[in-house]
Length: 88
Image (cartoon, rainbow, N blue to C red; front, side, top):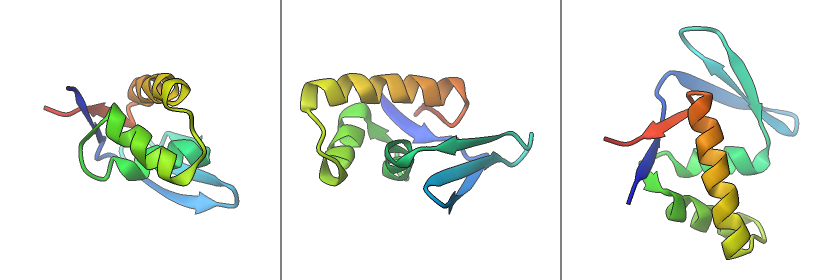
C-alpha cells in the first residue's frame, strides 16, 4: 500500500477558522479547511490513505466509502500543490 508523507518545505498555523500554510522556499501559501488540516496532522508520520481516513473518522462523522474517495481526492490535490508526496 502506498504511504503518504508531508513535504518538509511547508509550515503552517491556524488563522481564525483556516490553517495557513507557507512554502519556505518559494513563499507560496495556501489555506486549508479543517478536514484538510486534520489530514495534514495525520501525516505527521507517513501513513496510508486508509490511516488518514481513520484519523478523519475519529474527528468527523465520515462515511467509510465516501470518505475513502474524498481522502484519495484530497491527497492527490495536496500532492499537486506539493504539500504531500508518496513516501519512498
